[in-house]
Image 1 (tube, rainbow, N blue to C red):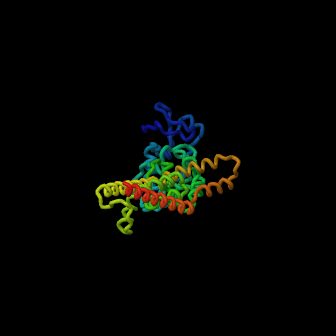
Image 2 (tube, rainbow, N blue to C red):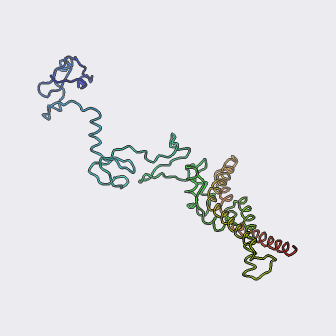
Length: 320
């Protein structure tokens, strides 16, 4: 006798247990509890009778899952299920690897949270290629991306990807070519006055040996320093090396320093509850952006410090 344990009676919906009094339809083989069959008065599995089929026990859930998986192929890039006959994903166009049903943590970011928040940063969504998409209302380290863009002004695409990376993944290093080549005025150009004044003073002083060498070697100006002496060459090499170090540090950390200043300035402006949104936006734009007057003032200050120091060194050396 067949074992119907685990199957269900289609009349009452209960699972057959071992020892139950079971009867089967003589035509299609559908099993019933004896009392259910007599209560119905006939076999109610009309579909099997109509199609001329015989009753078959249900497959275990694992077999059903495997059978369903065999009819679809999961895209390894976006996670979409595709018909097994497809060669490329219908959603993103990635070639499909047949037989790959591995679960993948698609588009996850560090410290995933609830309600669309990921590590404290709003995930707007993903595009057709599984990439995370942000808009101006996305918050990066507590500041909206739109405010960062207003603050930066010119060339936002050169800064915002780094700002997102700093805010979400941490880290401080990136490369800013402008800060490397124009260190003495770049920070002032971006209205980073504290760092700009420091850069002007430090580089103006470090460039004193170079200016002395230039005036003596190429301009034939006697500044009272023997540029051929070993002591001068030592000082010249040391200051040249330190100048390069300063430029490299500026190139690698300028974007991060700008990000920290932007965050502070924007937060201060947004904390003023008396301003409406339009006024706050204008203040952010004015506070950030660029300034050519700062560049001119920085260059003049650099020249005055450098040349003044060269003259002072020359007079000291002549009086020795």
